[in-house]
Amino acid sequence: MNKYLAICKINLLNSLVYPTELVTRSAMILLFMWIFFQLWHITFVAAGSDLINGLSLHDTMWYLLLAETLELGRPRSARTISEQVKDGSIAYLLNKPYNFLLFQLSNGLGDSLPRMGILFLLGGALVWAMAGPPPDLVNWPFALIALVGAWLLHFFVNSLIGLSAFVVEEVAPFEWLYQKLVFILGGMLIPLDFYPVWLQTIAKSLPFAYMMYGPARLFVQSSLSLFPQILFGQLLWLVVLGGLLILVFSRGMKRLAINGG
Amino acid sequence: MLRELKFLLSLFKTNLAAAMEYRVAFISQSIGMILNDAVYFIVWIIFFDRFPSIRGWQLPDMFIVFGIAASAFGLAGLLFGNAFNLGEIIVNGRLDYYLSFPRPTLLHVLASRVVPSSFGDFLYGFISYSASGQFSLDGLGRFFVGVCLAMTVFLAFLVLVQSLAFWMGTGGVFSSMAINAIITFAIYPITLFNQSAKVILFLVIPAAFMGAVPAGFVKAFSWSTLGLMLIGAAGFMLFAILVFQIGLKRYESGSAIQIEV
Image (cartoon, rainbow over all chains, first blue to last red; front, side):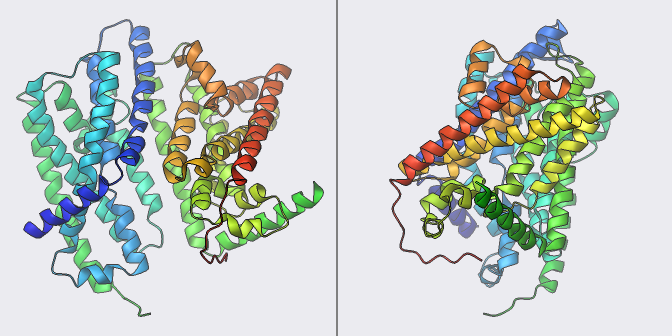
């Protein structure tokens, strides 16, 4: 365990070497949150109501902030792993005294933590100014637990996409499609509560809702019935996707052909 | 002028041939991008199904705006693929190769690469316009004119932002921010924004010239709209070329050996 914590720490410190670049990259969230506010402010005015399906403009904005933080801060293991497979550098990682997947997880965590922190702080400051103070502190622990589960789900799916490089030449189309499915079925751009009921049912039976909607919803309106639902859904999909990842990795290792040079 | 056009044509043919060398990857990326764009657009279908009009802006308008932005983005990637990483080329000293040729440096740099997935974006734009419910043959002609002028503004903006690398010594950060900024603003309804924001969208981040203005031209011909688009495209492009040339005087050659294949 110590070695994985060390890997995470090294990557975290690496991310902080150029703080100006980290902050500049994270400033994109200001643009997104500002546009979201323009859109939803006008939408709520047009709807003629302070609440739409139980969410106020304040709730919607803080929901979107957490969703956007998760989207911009999620692990990019798909790109990393596929490049390592395609250029053969995976060979140098496989003969090291650590588990390849846990190595990627530690790396990804070290990269995501400072990014998500800065994103939340910058975006949060703007949303506070536009829509009001953050949600009740009592929601935060539930959202944080769900955030961890969501991050892991993203890692598992991204790693599966990266490992598809064993089979396909180019993984980018899978990455794009996955991202868009998270946008739609994860409620990243529009809270799932605003969807037609039939689409909400479909979305909540798939893992994407637990990658995005779950933690964001708990952040704005936590409840003793919602939290166990989200947690159970995340645990179920963690087992399914985690098992699939281990299976695909072990099959991929059997297919691996490394050419010398 | 004719010589430069012949030169451009030769470059395009060579780049396309190089991209088609990996035919499966080219086709899969193009199809993947069409799917990516289509799935992304579903968000707007869900939104306008729930909220039919945003200050007069409706779903058919989104089809056209999205189509213009997608095709303009795609055309830029197909014809001038290095526009997306001009900053890195400057920072890494890779302009040396282009400076040694008796050809306009900026034109040569920009036109030396094809982004394979851009073909999918380019095609999708036409699909989106066809699905808008406002398709007509003369509208298609105006759509193509709008796409060409929107592409010109987009290219000019990318060149402008990335030319900052001559002064700031950093390339990638501003490139991705610039692309995100202009695309994000271009595909959101312009009716969301107040007058001061619209000034920014016309003069600073010219997203209006990449989305709303050409979309209006597609819906109905107007000499004033055409004039505005031509002035916007010419003005931004001339300014971008000027800034690049001024920056080029500060350029210092790197000592790396560069091979272009």
